[in-house]
Image (cartoon, rainbow, N blue to C red; front, side, top):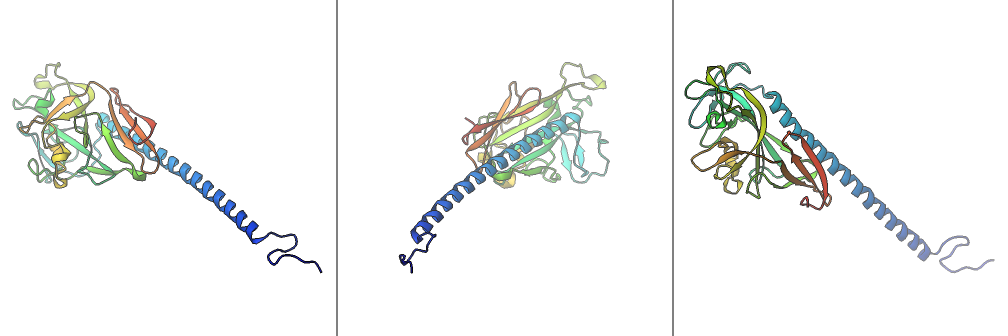
Length: 285
């Protein structure tokens, strides 16, 4: 009869050897799981920022094509002081309003929105000025959001769209304005101030990017969440000192990953193309 230790079987392993094998196997499993999870997170981040790039480009493309995506009717009456008066009482079909035009869209990121979201506002403007001549500039057009404000257009229908930033993405910064906590960017029809206007109309000269300066109506740091729509309601010159201005440069803004140490640097150039560059770290450095 062969003799062996109390914890050994011929041709087998001791308990200590078995535990060592299990420990090594567990460590390899954890490492493999972490590697796979890291790859999945990076893939999720890439998918999310690429989708976001397409969303931003779609906003621009719809504006350039004049496509108004909402089916809701509303009444829009020209106002030469505060911009169009908008209510939810409209019955006319799309494209038949004689007093207002769909002039563009505004993007808003900031603390006044729910975390991990951004808002797109459709913008309406006066079709004609006080002399009943088609508008030739934004000072006459006075674009406003098709959304209720606490001061302007409180009865307007809310046709803004809140979009979710997937995979825990968060807004970090943008170079549109001096605000470090909010980002308001508009893609607007550029009314031709050199066409002469007259009674036949103003002509067109494409679309452009516009930013904002001054004025508490759009500064998110001074804006309670319930007044979010005032951000876009007062995008023209107003008594609070807010001012819309044409951007003569590309617009950059940074979106950080929620699962990896990465970020996406988005750039909208003067041709209104949205570009994306992936950066290491959370601040697009």
